[in-house]
Length: 429
Ligand code: ATP
Ligand code: MG
Image (tube, rainbow, N blue to C red; front, side, top):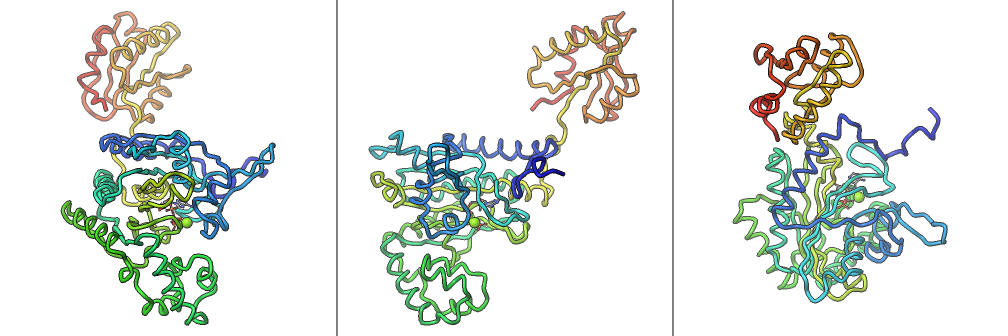
């Protein structure tokens, strides 16, 4: 096939058979966030490259190798957003909605772009639902974020398949002291580190903790521990968070090696991970970034947030077969009309029913067809009932009401009584 008729590698179409599950997932999250009092914000997908360089810093994987950057016709350097936090901070600062300590609890949804090696659970255009809270600095809000995701896993039926990993990175001062100690230790073992880690030792040494290389992992066993460098405030914050998770009964594992790819985190960091998706096991990740807003040029404003990968969570629902039955059925009632006159009457009847039952999923067979072929379509649609309008029904001003899933015999229903009848037999969501 010619290249112009192929999607870009790592950028996927979400086909009609997949969208019901996406919409179910997105709808479940949106309702939950509404209920907890979070408000949606929508940012552009493209920003000045400088924004991401300033917020994510040059030394992370994202800025080093993953950004889709282009020059537009004015010569401006633009980047397709690789994540949402930077744009969200830019937006709240630009509109002054976090000024004077105003609390904002925001969420967003949409595509993100990273030039990574495409594989299962890792794409170049992928989708996130993200959330950012500004000007609340206590551990109670960190706990709320985690509690909310815990509830979500419960509602989706995947709670048993995810695990919460938790760490505290301390304030930037205590992390700075730890970084120094780590660099000193790792430099003394420089030759035993893998090449990637040798490079990271110079650019972003905490990321070395995250290595998958066995030799480097062996070196790390005796490395200084972040927990020993935590300042009192961060320690108290972390204890406060753990106490709240314990109170709600949310299990977690402490992972001192959890440092997160992005450079701007402080204090709490967490990841929800699963072993059901192979190598791409992180489904939701986040943490506190109290210094970021100031680093980007705003007044000191605390922040905490997370982002979840929609593709990975949809994959989880499929893998664990947690797909609610009702989303696979998209039609309640299917109307078949035979003959020109019946078609016109059917159209009018369908509109009358829709007036009275706006949530009813009523599909009208478009185009002519034999009795048999229309019936086949009705059955294939997954509808619970077929409505039949032929010459006999026209003469008597009734409609044939035929259960398609073996729930009883066909009956005749008067046109005037149709909506009331449907209301009693179709459960509407
Ligand atoms: P990873 O370690 O898997 O690369 P990350 O730390 O780069 O993840 P974040 O920037 O924290 O990821 O993004 C939050 C979530 O977005 C991830 O936990 C994951 O679920 C999802 N995600 C990140 N990158 C991709 C991608 N390329 N394709 C699909 N989902 C992704
Ligand atoms: Mg990544």
